[in-house]
Length: 249
Image (cartoon, rainbow, N blue to C red):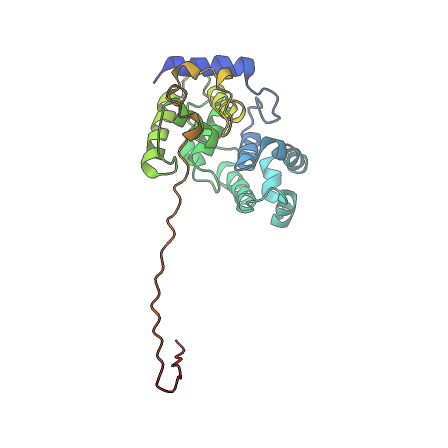
């Protein structure tokens, strides 16, 4: 674990990171969870209005759990990936039934809830409860792949295992939530998929992708599937009278 890596990110986040997102610094696991689910594969600008409407209608997880699924789905309309909304509702019910309406602090327990994977569990635990828990969303994968010079598609099991090992090793004991927020902020605003702003990156001096001219090539894209080749054999039979044999297969 590199203390300097975490310290650099923490110092950067305090000065240049995002500070005004409505779900930040609330210490409310319900709000953190709601934002994390909505932000999966969706831009922050799109999520803002949905997040506000959901909280206005369902200010607590108990309110969400008690709502009809049709109403939840209606409010979600337009955000896409509708399985997220179904899992959201199912998760709220389980939080109420199993945990008395309070999200657990333990990452392992959080992962038992519908729609909550390892990274989302780490985000809830660290951002809401200050637990030393790691995250690995798309932004963080991109930062790690570039900074540590990791080649290979990030979703391949061996590559993903390596990325999780880095995530676990680097998360600090102090301010783990802010550190994770820094990683997300850096990936969203500086270490972007295209045209990264390397000159504004606090990690540029140690970034292997930048040193090796690999910034545009990392993370490694998903391998393209090879198109199968098909070969056909046609037999044409013609008799002495010029007639052809046609046979239906």
